[in-house]
Image (cartoon, rainbow, N blue to C red; front, side):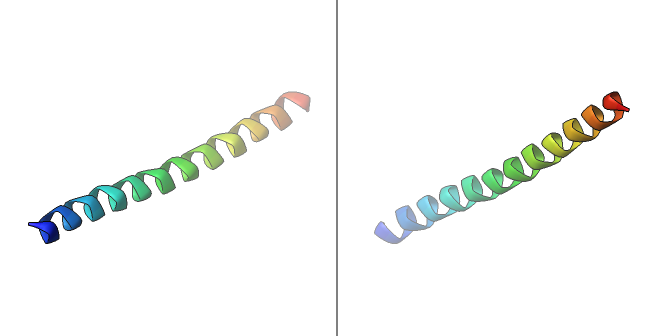
Length: 43
């Protein structure tokens, strides 16, 4: 029983970690995209 709970918690934690990494990448890409737009507007 304890082992099953541990595995479920581990899977949930791992999925949250992966989702967090994806979100970080998306935020970085969006900020780079916004910077590019600002540079284009300045020119």
